[in-house]
Image 1 (cartoon, helix red, strand yellow):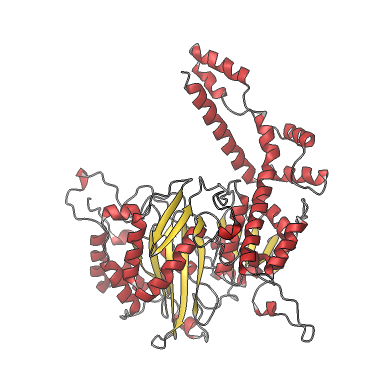
Image 2 (cartoon, helix red, strand yellow):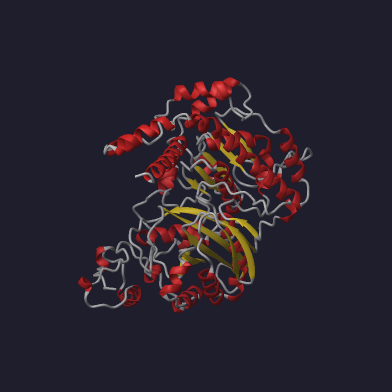
Length: 606
């Protein structure tokens, strides 16, 4: 591969480097690009020049030490910023490396880990197989002087500065979770668009990177902070929350115990996996565990348990995995225990592309709930943005959090009480968890111990359109007081119920679309015209235009299987849904499907 001409001063201001750093930067560049003297004779894709995340620059990316020293309790990712004014939070043109003071470089555990990661090698054939599933596994540590920092990624992956900073903060909870322990959560951040693949960075599938983080905290008196806080993060282009959550639950503890050798072993296991072919059931071996993984046909495919699993007791979500489904451990109904009776209203808000703020006590709660709502929307396409865990440090903070009305379809998972104030104008807020009634003697409630809104559903505008399933509601309430298996079974029943509701929503629309498909007589006429050499008539092989008035005539005539509270509620609901961006995407999908089938059938005759 040719060595592209890269001038550091093209990307960084004068003074961004110190003299002692140039040798390190040069060695990194030489490791990124293979040596070749003739640049004009090669057509191999080159790694993008813009914004290299050089390890040497980590020295210059530091947090304000004085702010951190004031903490009496170790905060996993940052000081308490609940009182910070929003004007000081959103400065997208600046990064930490450009604003914070430089500190002397001191040999520490991060340096040792970084050296171990850089010593790991992977050949190009193995790398290509690993990248079918993941972009890389990042190791993030909390440094007392610099804050959360990405110490390295294996296999090696070029990250732009803003991406690296975003991953670092998103991989840590932004509030104290426990004295010692671990937690798994996920996030979705905006990444740079990469048009051409290279060994250091594959081309982008979409504009987002999915991260699945295994965060640990344990006491360590040898550290100035008194705690070791670390996250192991799987970075991927696949939105498979159930799958990668299980993978992290196996890999995370092993990495904490054995370190980088286990990282290398995990990646070699991934290289042996079969391709993630849509619609397949795969048997995957990973670090001594055999998993059955069902890959969805598409991102909008609502995965259900296969008929081969005849009994609910046979389903173990830790071993039989619906890749795109939400994690089932812990049972999801525990997230909504304070809002069980409102789940039908919440489902309506999700399908109507209403923005929802998810407030939880931990990133694990918000990310599981966000994936749950995404799952209930299928097979309707995702028209809005979904952020399973969102922090004030996210590069999209000012884009998504401002005084304007929130964007349609936005589902935002947060834990920082700051969002309770800055998002007070949002129409819907779901606070996750279990509601405990106040003690009548002391008139206090344990829910008040957690910052933010108490668990429950709050809406300013929405009034329910459909009737509740009272029998299911009773089952859910009983399961919350029952065994773990009862909670899992109730969660599966709840998921199946609302997936069925989503499909029932589409039945009247599908019925009307069938009337828009060209009739056999019309298709025969088009074929005759094509036989005479008039190829332009082939463009008529498509759905006829959708007319709302005609659809509502069809709806009034045939009704809907959804149990609407009244015919006027039914009319109002569909009038609203036809105005959502989700309807436009769904209709475009149906038009493409019909057109492809018609063209394929006619094409066989010519």
